[in-house]
Length: 329
Image (cartoon, rainbow, N blue to C red):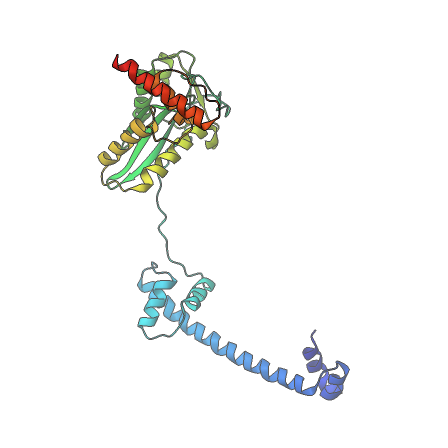
């Protein structure tokens, strides 16, 4: 109990003056407190009454918009109707009364459907992504790209050692043929390698009979990620992230054909080796080479650099001239 409440409770028995002396306060403080509290109660009462009136107007405009308008649009309609109120007050009243617009959440397609009765293959990879021999492990996955005509789905196969996309396929559906075509392309380009691990998620496309038939005929070994563990296929997630950051999110595709052509160029020209001379990517990404290694490839020999910039520059320049002389002869 605070001092004012104590004095109020006992003032009829002992008097205000005696109680104020007891708690070491003046009578003016006590009566001033009463006046301030009464004024505050009056203001709060008036504000509460105004909030009730505003709530009715807010509900009217909210119903007129069929539940689509938020606080900003409701505030705009109130001001147009001659009601002087701030947007923050409108937002507070709507929040306190749980009035909120129905927001349309962007629909994103689900590319992995692991809720099927097909038996998944064991996870043989175990996130061991440090592979140095090509055609040892292939990674496969599906992603989507939005266009003006609808979704375009991309299935890709990636060599874990070279980081090269060795097979891909695009379509407007998520059928098993999408993944089968990507795997066939990889086999046509690299050839069947018995014992190669073909890793993917547990999607119904990769567990289908058609996909497993191709794996069996090529004498590959199928591996699947654990359920709900997208990081078991992290290198493929990294490729899709680069694709969307460097291509998809930079432009809008009016048609699926336009998106298909752009993705084909990205995979075949930009992402896959050989890299352009200005590439700054590291060699272990499979997407480019350091400048000195690129020069070595041009002249067809190995150059050992000493660490001295002037000496190394002279040495590389000499080998360039030697290479040009050999080609002229």
